[in-house]
Length: 371
Image: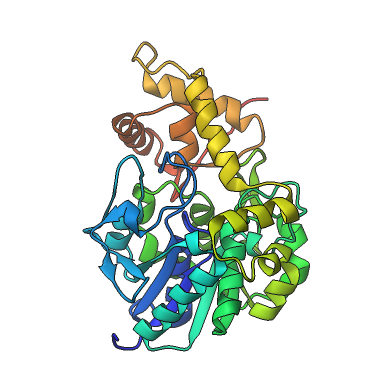
């Protein structure tokens, strides 16, 4: 067993580990040793294989218990799988433990118990950016409830003292801020610009949008933000930098899917529970998107140099700003303009040189356009 560490669980995978590291720094201090448990369940733009990854999908993980593995900067996903967790392990100050949901809530509970023993603690802080950890399953904008619900069900099955934290209500565009706030009450902590320093370098390369919006909100940015993943823009408000704490019991009371997952022992059973409670399986949706991408070649803006990059950006910016959007994520720029990494770097240099005021890190400020 290692020396005492804080134990945290990033509820939804993807960029939740980034938010969890920031919340940990805000609550306990950036130098407090900690282990963050997280899924390797990332957007298809990062990992083209549908569903979450398990330890056998990686090389170079380090055992921390019979079933728990740590992801380190020396770890790597086995192709064709992809994962940004090894690079996150290099940039974050905390250790990263890999959650394997293929054993259902029961298997996850075993991993959480092993993690608690490894850390020498009897408490876990669950952290979710956006708030879908509190979804009841009926929200029309809900897209990815399964990982969060499994986390709650596993903590309950492990019988470990658990606090549930929602950071940035509504920022993941799954449950609207207005629907969440009545259940959240007063913020337990409001993040500040100082709290974002521990993740400052991450957004130079990581495509997480919800965590980027949370960082922007903590730095005082307010306004309408356009992201790639959401059909509607997100508005940063004074509630956006808040971290809200609930008991596990209250979270389970709100999350019907988590209750239905209580005794699941494999991911197939968890998928069936999601179909029953929410009417869909996000893993099935990922499979369908992959199949559709193989059948159809999307129509993309010209990227062959025939139109200068600044001109392409200016045209796109005008069109986007006309929709009332003031800020955008780097990922939205990159994907909607179909930019390769070197083109994105070129555009970044151009924007910073020609108009430094556009930068509102980790977002970009759009120039007003004539109506």
